[in-house]
Length: 465
Image (tube, rainbow, N blue to C red; front, side, top):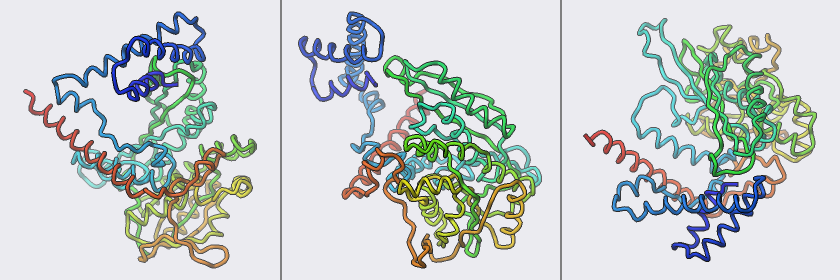
């Protein structure tokens, strides 16, 4: 429970200073909430409640300051659209739109990189300033992923899968992973053992692929202001390569699309745990993806591959749409060939639960390469015991589409949210809101105002002396 957020919300709804009676009532309500989490007596809970209310009210006094720039600095350029309303984090059309707005803010800095968030790719890439000769070129890839929110109660699995996800994002850019970093935030009442369990999950992946964990950070979620035991965390990875990144924008018409067998990661694990398919959890515990990408590095094939991506955000529907949007090219997939590349246990679970296999993360490696190179890629990946198959081709139609099992053609478009894989997600649904265009306009305005604010602060800092 976010007790600071609780008080801010109550004060905002009052829209005025509290009188003594209102303040005492609010103290009592908050004290009762605190006692639900803390093993303290009522008097101490009241003291905590008073402190929180006093701190929040003090911060609100800034609104009466004569310093207009300070008030602007701390004010949020609101979109008046909530995260859940927009589908942020749900790997669908709303989420993709917001990520493009984040990319616009990043692009406004005018800092240069080979691959940045504008490409909506898996990782970012910069060219090392060391050396100028072709044989000395070094490309540095970075990526960061957050733990699946529903795995907070299963820290080891959360750590294992977020580490794999971060490393995958480095691998698909054609880089060889060289380091892992970890950031853990555990709420005030969380058992310290959660920190160790999460770290052990990350360390398991580190040991399996011999890539060291080199740095990290450990903090409480919201400090004293958040009660409970929620764990949120992220793992970052760094990789290096002597060849330009295999970014989505390098795909060309005539290329062949290959897909490795996928058994899922955090999303499939969550689906299994919360729907009673516990045996499927073991299907996800592997490093096949990293073995496959490392084989391409070993066999010096990365330089010949045009593009690679992991089938995660929004499933293959989302990836196909993003590749087509980025390149302007079309992609044609064969549904039956794709289904064969989902492990039988995972596919059976998804079909039993009526979950679209093309709309969720199955953690396959998708490779786009010229036809002659595709044969070498297949041989290389199969040599490390990973299954791979051709699932489609790239063309100039500009439309991502799939040939279904009945021979009909379906245009691949991301849903508003990725395919619902838990009961609560099915209740929320994936239907695009009727006012989606209005929502996008409000989000766009908030992003624009954030850029203006950034520019103003940069100008102030550069010229204050």
